[in-house]
Image (cartoon, rainbow, N blue to C red; front, side, top):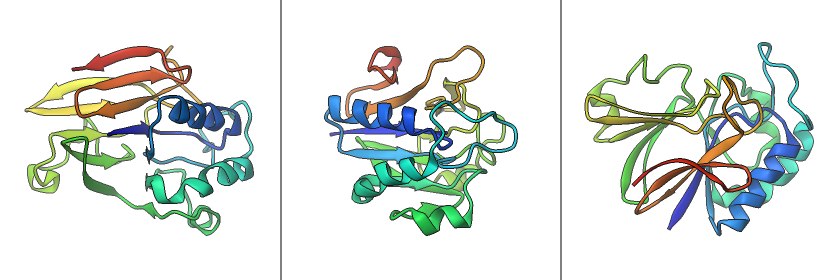
Length: 182
């Protein structure tokens, strides 16, 4: 079993398509989206291939295989065109033998850690928002960030996280391993 974790598509059909091609290439059936799906936001330039309607058309057929967390750029109108729910705040789920605290990152992150009670036994806090990949352990909790699918920052590459029972890998959109936890 494997899951792909991605964040910050920001309406780029070009890079969303590359993400979904990677999903097929890696034979991954489930996708976790950590927010900022359709809109680029006021602080970002338009990403290359900006076409939110095309992103909607690509993601909606996968509705039964997507878990989506609301980002700070996701709006009520986005939910009106997406066939899968955008979950506000955070979600705690078990994937690949791990308990994950999934959030966008604008409220909970390595700097603003969730309380232990809120974590509900999760050993991983996975978030996007910063557009910068992260792998750091603090107080026995792993804090992971896949970076951004469309607008990477601080010299990082467009990418995502592939999680299996045995490892966690940061991949670029061509499937090259950039980093990992075994």
